[in-house]
Amino acid sequence: MEYRRLGSSDFEISRIGFGAWAAGGGDWAFALGPQDDIESIAAIRRAIELGINWIDTAPLYGLGHSEEIVARALEGVASRPYVFTKCGMPRNADGRIIHSLRRDSIRRECEESLRRLRADVIDLYQIHWNIPAEEVEEGLETMARLQEEGKIRYSGVSNFTLPQLELAGDITSPVSLQPPYSLLDREVEDEILPFCKEHNIGVIIYSPMKSGLLSGKMTRERIAEFPPDDLRRSKREFQEPELSRNLAVVETLRAIADRRETSVAEVAVAWTLHNPYVDGAIVGMRRPQHAESIIGAASVQLSPEDLAEIEDVLARNLTLSAEAF
Image (cartoon, rainbow, N blue to C red; front, side, top):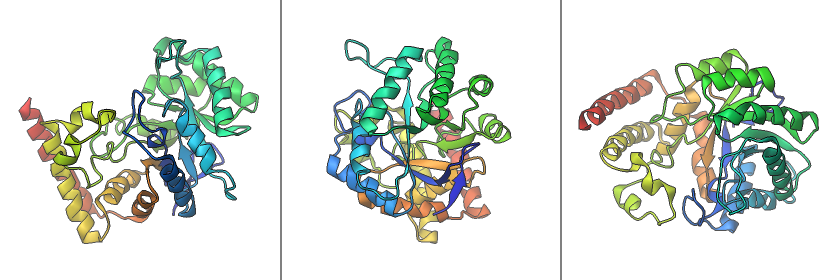
């Protein structure tokens, strides 16, 4: 496993991190379907054994359940990984998920996360979304105070725009940004990633396989059988005409994977790690086998020919997708 310094922090993180969204289980607004707690715990422990040294979770995932599962998984673990969690999407008095970056709300979320994680301090605390925009500054100021008080070691942000990153630098100097990034989602390449490099902001990307679409195991039949509580049922990339374009990209990844005797998923994640601005990729893992099957992505070296082949299929299918509209 390769490791890299995360921004201005003193964390040396593995190039692959454990994504604990699915550990939240089903039966909540943004679930990825049902999940067995015992398998989640086993997956986390296997990932740690393989050299993954950070876990990304959030109180949103399963409405706190994911954080509780992370705490259970880390009981008795000798070499404790870093635990990254988030704030900004609490539940209101009616139990509905809302967006809030108000001071009191973030402080309450922080205390609740510490309790669920059974921790004295949060390694990296991230603003989950930049919503409401008018509360971003108050949220950033609160993160700075929490760090001063020793509640969190470092602060980070997720899904921030370039102007918001500039604002954050004036208030908290976040050590990391967490944006979506994959072969099918490259909006951050032109401005945001170079800005992070210039200002020593680490980058840990999420959804490198676009919610499993680039895993090599997604088929039309499997998508049609998603359970009702699987968020992906409503995403346009899982629907036509985009689905055909995306599956064509997967076939190119499969050809590269076959030549390199690796998996489609590892090629997809390796492509994100090939970007010099990316420090680590969050990969969702439901079972121990998932950790075993993705760990090699950190060592896959894509050749210039591989990269050109990927760019070609993307360009061709982007054109076809545009024509369909």
